Length: 172
Image 1 (tube, rainbow, N blue to C red):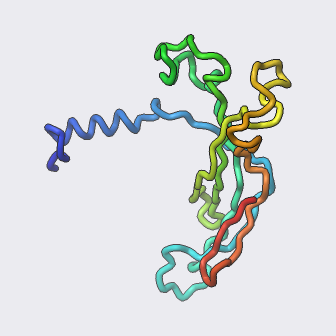
Image 2: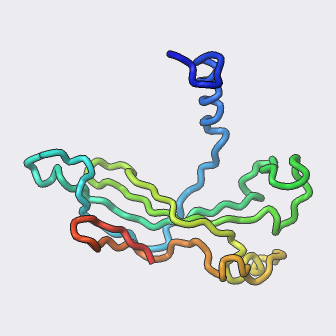
C-alpha cells in the first residue's frame, strides 16, 4: 500500500501506529458499579428487514459505572510529565490529582458481550466532600472548581422515548 502523506514508507507508518496503540501506553481501570443496572429492549441499529421480531431488538443491561484514577497508585514509579520536572518528584499531593470518570456500559444479553461504553463526565476526586481528609491527606474539604460535584455515577439508568421513535438513556 501507499504510505500516507508525510511518511516515507507504509512500514514506517505502521510501526508508528503499532507503537502508539500498544497496551503499554494505556491504563486499564476496572469499572465500579454504585447503582442498580437497568434491563432495556432497544431497537437494533442495523436490524435490516428481518421478519423475526427478536432480530430487530437488543436486550441490553445498562450499567452506570465510575472509574477511579489515582496517579500515586497507577503511575508505577513513572511521572506523567505534567510538572516542571518530567522525571517526577516535584509534585505534591494536590498537583498529582485523583480523578473520577463516569460512563454508561451496555451488555448485550443475547450475544453475551459488552457492546457499548459512553464516557459521560470527568472530575477530580478533590471535588468530593471530605476529599482524602478522612485518611489524613492534605486536600481541602472540597474544590470550588466543580461546585462540590464529583463525576460519580450513583443513579440507575432510565430509558425513554422522548421524541417519538428515538430511544434515550437518561442518568440523573
